[in-house]
Image 1: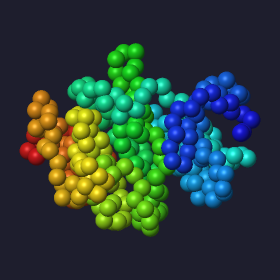
Image 2: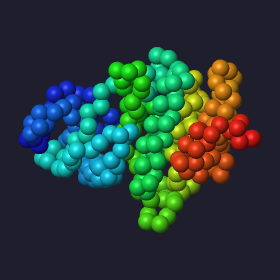
Image 3: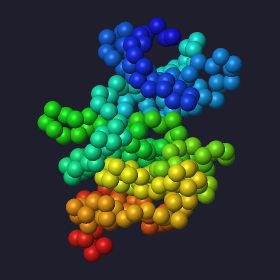
Image 4: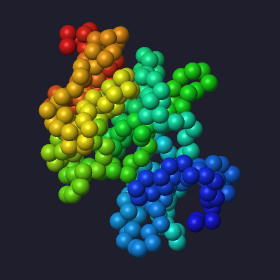
Length: 277
């Protein structure tokens, strides 16, 4: 282990990596340390490369709504990333208790879109936006702070391009929040993240995934055929403009979605009803 960091307690563990609460012995501050799981049989080079690529992408993003990267590197055990330790819980954990009320939803939308606008401005697509990848914290004044994390599946757009090919094999991401064109292996662009945000906001308001099924293939079919229960039916208390806006983000056809995060934010701040939409 890098001698600068002392592991304190596990935070989370996934298929290829673990996240720990740690202490930076130089500064005394607590941080989050993510590393590739130790490989006893070798063959971890690809996972380490992916972790370092994730760190490089995320370290370029300096924004209050994105988890900050402080350090990254390699040691005898593999690759690691040292990040800001975010207090609070995932959006998924919060929504499991209760669907968001208007004020919290407004904070979620504005802060997530502002963070993602910074991500896309750097030519990066997140491609794994889901409630488990947003950290939320209740502030002393009662407001909500939102931070985007986990850029492990992010893709960098080629210079001057607006699309990039998806990985040649596999189907990375969370099936409940993936755009239908991802299942069709279309080139990735900003509208895939916008679709995922629409699904995420629908979930935050209803505690339900907009596209459901008992198996992953059934969920994929629901996305592809756009089989979803209207948001207004589940939340009749919402303004029509909010319902229309969320449903536009998760339109079946990419051309029917906002073309950019900035456009999505403008549409949110200018209700569709006021524009005759």
